Amino acid sequence: MGSGIDKNNVEHNVYEVLIGQSTISEARVHSETGGYDVLPSNRELSGAEIDLVQMDEREKQLKRALGKVSHEYDFVLIDCPPTLSLLTLNGLASAHGVIIPMQCEYFALEGLSDLVNTIKRVYRNINTELQLIGLLRVMFDTRVTLQQQVSAQIEAHFGDKVFKTIVPRNVRLAEAPSHGMPGISYDKNSRGAKAYMEFGRELVKRLKKEAKEEEAASQPAEA
Image (tube, rainbow, N blue to C red; front, side):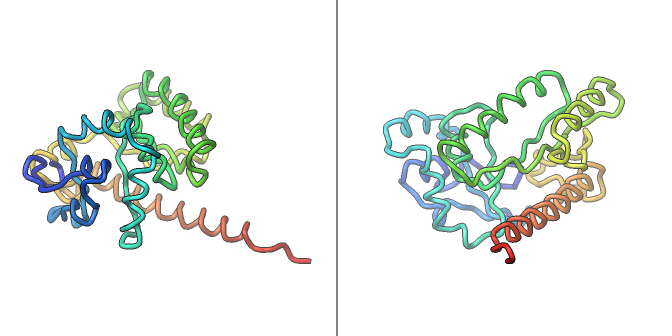
């Protein structure tokens, strides 16, 4: 909805893609306000878990579907719930990396270790390409001492895996979905939009660096 797409009027959706009734090429919708393609979902997705349980290699349904269109995109972003459901498993089985957006609050910190362990289990058993790209601190309020303390703990524990960019709590970002627009399009001069743009630059820079390191590691050693 935040991309200007009415989820109740889409012809096809990600639920149909997951159970094999539609392809991504048929289901994707272009967001005019965002300038990107969206694979839409609606309340039908809640039934996917039940249908997927009965399928062979159920955790790889999304990966198969994405494999047919991945050459058309530079980036594919998969939004997943933090629980280890079949939907999350499909996302992690399809991805090359994971970005964890998190609020700097106690319960988020508690759940972070569980999520990291989940990523490690998926890496060992399902997807050996999966890696933790980094942690992004969002909805940050500098006035709250606890958030500053949790932020410091995250940096101390995860080091360079923590993105330097911090996305502040921002009213303009919260308003954007109600106008059917991404935050960076709704008000590009807001603090939140500027932070997300900076995060995008930092992400691209990090991915380029990792690609160079992988390329160097794959080169044969000189005699």
